[in-house]
Length: 426
Image 1: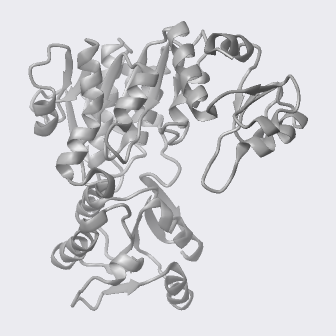
Image 2 (image 1 turned 180 degrees about the horizontal axis):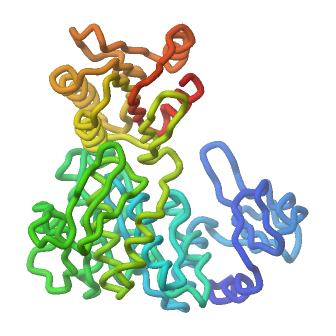
C-alpha cells in the first residue's frame, strides 16, 4: 500500500495507537517491535479492543482486510508522519540540547498557547517513534507545533529533522550527556548542531542564546538568527533570585516562578524570546511563566513534613548535576541533605566524571551526602559526611533507621535510578 493510500485510511481514524493496553476507539494501530516484544502478535487484540486498522509487517498476522501489510511498520509510521506534516504545513518549532529540553518545551508551549492553538511533544516522547507520533497528532486547527528532539548518537537529530521539517529551531545548550554515544563534548556539539545545519540548508530561523559562545560559534555567518540575551545588560530581563524558587525581572515587573535553579533562567529567556517573536502580549508571557508548574521529577520544589525537597530526578549528566549542585550550594539552609544517583551513558568517562562530582562536593558543599549506584560506590572520599550505597536497597536500609527533618534536600540522578523513591522515606 502506498503512503498516500494509507493516509486516506489514517484520515478516517481519530488517533494512533501503539499499545493494545491503551487502544482508543477507531484508532490506527501500528504493530511496532522492540527487543522484548513483537507488536504484530497483538494485531488481533488491537482490533478486538476497538482499533479500526492495524499496520503490520509480518504476513502470518494478516487476519482480515482491517490489517494493512507493509514492509516495515516503524518506517511506515515515520513516512506517514512526514506526509501528514507536509499536508498540514503547520509551523513547527524544533528544539534539542543536552539539558532542559522538556522544561523549555513546556515553557514555550505555556507562553504560545495564551494566544495560539498549540500542540507540543507529550512528556519526553522525543525519539524516532515519539516525534512521528507527535506529528500525527497534529490537526488542522493547530497553529504552532513544538517538537522536542532527543538523541544519543550522531545523525539522529538530522533524521528527526527530515521527518518533522522544522520551520524554527532552538538548542538549549551543549553539555556532557550521552558521551557513550557521542564520544566527547565535541561529539555532542556536532550532533546537536545537526538541527542548525538543517535550518541553514532550508533558510529557516534559529533562536540563538548569544550568551553561549559555543552556540554563537555554531551559528556563525548565518543571517536568519533571532537572538536573545540572558544577561542583565539590556535591563529588560534579569535574574533576581534562584533560591529555592527562581524569580526574574521582566519589563520592570518581578515574576516569581515555581521553578528552581538559576540554570532554568536560560530556559525562561528562550520562552520569552519565542513568545516575543510571535507577538504574544507581554502580560500573557509573564502570566504563563508565573503559572507554569514543573512535573515529572523535573526541577520540582516539594514541601513534605518539615523538609523542603528539590526533586530533579528525571535525568542527570555531569553538566546538569554540576548546575544543580551549584544552585544547591547557594541556597541557604541550616541543614542540607543530598541524594545523588549514578549518571548513565558516559562510557569511558564515567569513572572520572563521578569522581569529579565527589571532588566538587568535598570542596564546596557542607551537607549530609548520600551517593547511590555502582559508579558512585567506586568513588573515593575522605569526607565522613559522604556515604556511598551500591544499590537503592542499601540506601533503603539506611533510610529506615535514620530520619531526615528540617532539611533542604536535593534529589538528582539518571532516570534509571528512580530516585523519586526517596520521597517515601522523607
